[in-house]
Amino acid sequence: MIQETLVTSQNTAGLVHIAPMGIHRDGDHFVILPFRPSATLDNLLATGVAVLNYCDDVRVFAGCLTGRRDWPVKPAVTITGSVLACALAHTELALLHIEDDDTRPKLFCKAVHTANHAPFQGFNRAQFAVLEAAILVSRLHWLPPEKIASEIAYLKIGLEKTAGPKEWEAWQWLMDTIAAHTSEVAL
Ligand SMILES: Cc1cc2nc3c(=O)[nH]c(=O)nc-3n(C[C@H](O)[C@H](O)[C@H](O)COP(=O)(O)O)c2cc1C
Image 1: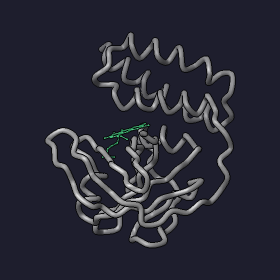
Image 2: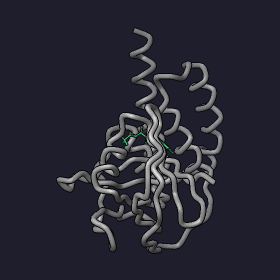
Image 3: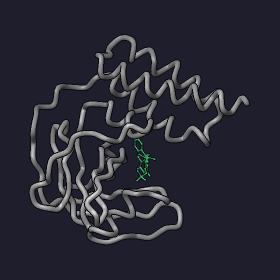
Image 4: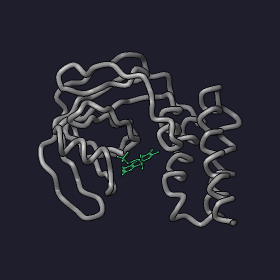
């Protein structure tokens, strides 16, 4: 199973980095697969730890893809790391081993601490739409413009029916980024 999480990691100087990542999970073992180059990869190799944040504020996912990476954090409990203030729950990870690859190494990790902070509020189609649109934004440079346009048109149906203010704000950031990319490509 793959879970869409926000990975917080930090470098040896303590600078926190937040990145959305699809994490492969098997019990209390997790695999993080960062595409090179990746600050998350560099930080995990340097410190051996990271935090998975389970978060329903999709502005953080959209924000990280649109240059808004400064989100409130608090200290992790058992590792030198940071937890997103908006996380409903989080898991602290220790790196066990790496399966290296020129494109996408696999980082095998084990959970060392998990905590709940707030209740899960149920599924929301607009949050799904924002996550999918954020993935499209992360692939803007490979995908044909027609594919992006058709997927956005479909995702907008669920968004318009179910979004709250946070989902609309996140969606707008993503649409601005897609519009800027489209006009750049057209030049
Ligand atoms: C929902 C979602 C899942 C993502 N999963 C991955 C992933 O598994 N691996 C990856 O390299 N990038 C993934 N991305 C894109 C990264 O978040 C983005 O490119 C990021 O900047 C990664 O590089 P970094 O470690 O340097 O921050 C994902 C983006 C989204 C929105």
